[in-house]
Each structure stands twice: as structure tokens, then as C-alpha cells.
Image 1 (cartoon, rainbow, N blue to C red):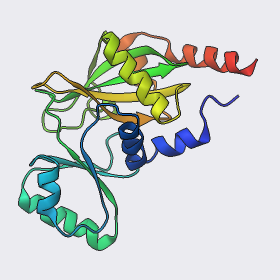
Image 2: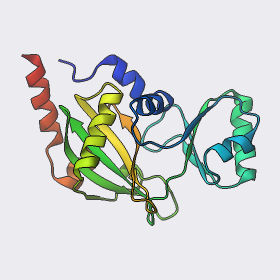
Image 3: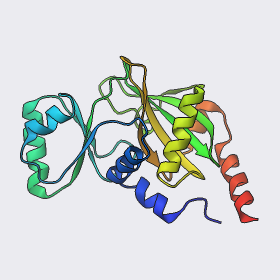
Length: 210
């Protein structure tokens, strides 16, 4: 049997649709603006709380298509180039997770978190992705963080199997939902945590087959 609904995979594969789903479900997530051929870059930056801001192509994985805009010059030149190409972007407020930059990958299977680890960015990068840094550590999520991960998976209709990315703000200590992944890699989470996530997915598939 399939462990994922096609609608859920479609939502999770589009960063803008995912952001809308999180917002509609009233989850704590980053301020986001959908940008198609934007003209007023200053207005966008103000709405997102100032520089730096994070820009993402609507599709992409393993950190690809994600970049940071640190000042007015980089914003106007980068967004101007994408505007001329007709490429849509998702622009989001920057969440400072401290040094080194990090996020949390929580794997939800059958509406519960079966494993979670913190992924660190390279020193010269801000993207916290295991495929880039190969660096991480096992974390024990609070009850609120576990519920946030499950709620995020539900929001994108992937409560059966979903890899949820979250980030903890170093200033407020609040946890934000960043993304949901319908086909999250098992390599990093199983190596770092020692949890048999694949086994949990198999058990879930056997359960829904009945």
C-alpha cells in the first residue's frame, strides 16, 4: 500500500503550498511572501522584518534552490534577475538559530515522532542540511515540539509518513515549522539517532494494508 496521499505529496513538494497549509492550520511558522515578478523590493523586505531574508524556489531538496539576501543590493539584483526570468520565489523572514546554524528534522510516522536530530550547517553556509554538512546530533523533543511536528504533518496531509523540518530561534526560544517533506531521506536520521525509522514505516504500511 501507499503510505502517502497524492495530495499530501503535491503540497509538500511545493514550498508555497506548504507555507499556506501551516498558516491555515495556525502553526508557528515563518512570515512568508510569494513573489512573482516583484517590483517593490523595499516593501517586501519591510514586511519580512528586514535583512537578512531567505529566498527559496518553490521546488527543491537537499538545500538546493535556497539562498540568503543580506542587503538591498543583493535583494534588488537577485530578485530582479528571477523576475525577468519569470521564476516564482518564496521569500521568508530569517530565523536566527545561533552559531553554527542548525535546524531539527523530526520524522513523523503514523502520527507520532519516531526520531529527531539536529542538523548543523557548514561554517560558511546557513543551510542546515545533512546532505551538505554530514553533521548532526540526536535531540529529545519537548512534548510541544513533538505535537508541532505531528500537526505540521497533518497540515500537509502526510500524517502517515512525513519528515518535518523545524527551527528554534536563539532569541525567543520559539520553535518554528519550516518545511515538510513527503520523501525525506533516512540516511542522516538513522545514522545519527540509531532509530530504525525504515522499520517504523514498514510497520505502518503493514498496518494500513489490513
